[in-house]
Amino acid sequence: MKRLHDNLYCQLLAAALAFAAVGFENDLPRASNIENLRVLGGLVQVVGDEARSRPKPGEKARLSWSMAYPDADADDSHLASVFFTCTAPQQFSGVPLCQELIDIAKGGSISAVLDAAMNEEQPDCEKNPDRTYKLGPFTVVCVTGTPRLDVPIPKDSKGNKLVRGIICQNGTPHFDAQNPTGMSCDGADEFISVYGTVPVQYEEADANLNPNIDAASMQFHDPPVPWLPVAEDVAAELNDETCLDEAKAKHVMHTDGHEEQITLRYEAEQREERNGKPETLQFAVYTTFGKVSQRFVIFSPTTELPLKRSFKWELNEDERKELNDKSKHVRFFFVVTDGRGGYALTTRDLCVNRR
Image 1: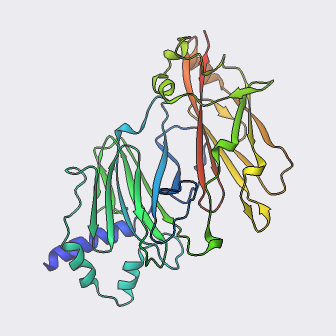
Image 2 (image 1 turned 90 degrees about the vertical axis):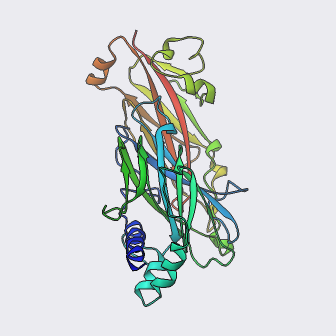
Image 3 (image 1 turned 180 degrees about the vertical axis):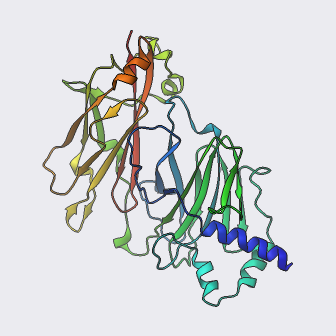
């Protein structure tokens, strides 16, 4: 039994100590070009009141990670993930640990924690790819497809929730005590480690809403014309070839590949008020092809109205040669954060036809 305890403790400790390559705190990646599998950010929504980003005790939070791929036609169907949740530490610097393990280190009883965990079925994401496991005070969730999980907040909760995980593309995730991150992927083409905290609303002042993405609008060309998101069924069929199909791509923005202007707008009255002032919103722009001249757009409380910024998108010489006389489906991602855990995402599609 002691050996089983030691092995389980190593797995739990390794997962809790996992150093994440991408944080759930919506630390935005540096490059605007999607050249590898990427996490653009994490969305927290209160189940039943999805506009809110901070659940109260007794409510449930839903966490979703936004993925991006170099191939604009790719989706989340080839992903598999495992997530580990516990209580976030009351104080920390650097990589956060589970409060339960900190309490043990301060003299708590590891046996009580491990005895509770040993009485439960051990996680196996290969045999049970969509399953939730309880290991004492810890929860392990196996997920296929879009990286998403629900995190219940106990009515007697006294802290925030900590979430760690690994996202595998064409692979199987599992705990790995021998891996420095505490988790690994078998046979994956690519993988990304993620972590973050779910802030819990204990006071009215802690409340926060996710930015209203419907208040954001895009324009393309100069002079500008409305650039609307395409319907899901149209987006599902879009690829380099269908960009040439007038019937399938008639509602998609087109360009011949020369320099273009993108204009981003946001309805000022849709911003939350914080301490009597409008909140600051930061947009980040990503694309699967070409280059944008401005990766970040910030609307602060002092930004002049209307809230609007224009920037350029263009192809370099190598990209022009790559296209030659072909067509290409390009996807743009517009991410907005409010600096308090609020997050939203919208996409736009573009057909580049050089013929």
